[in-house]
Image (cartoon, rainbow, N blue to C red; front, side, top):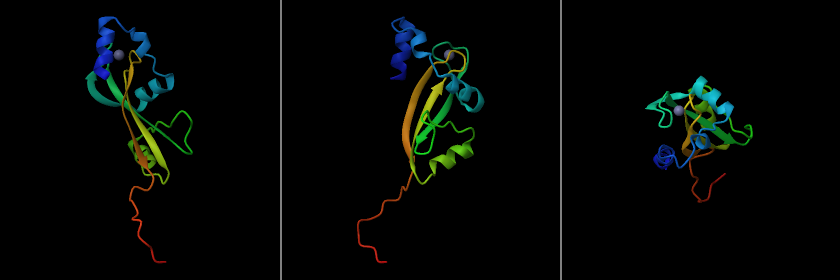
Length: 119
Ligand SMILES: [Zn+2]
């Protein structure tokens, strides 16, 4: 999917501005806490893209929370309430961004059997 978009841009069928519209906050997060992915940006090729993780869930800002450190990210993932994590690839140079994956985390992961419990 990512490659398809990149191809369309290279062919001129999609304007780079249409896919390079990362939110300013996302760009700031990319510069401050982004983790380098090691690839040059497929759109502008000027900088390497970085990965930023956004976490959505109860008690978090509507726009999601962008943990500044791995420790904070791990804490969010281990919350009692379930959260949804979005890994986003961002180019700090041209503001291209792409959703890498999203996955649920937090909550009680161990499944209780439906058997009777004494107590
Ligand atoms: Zn770029």
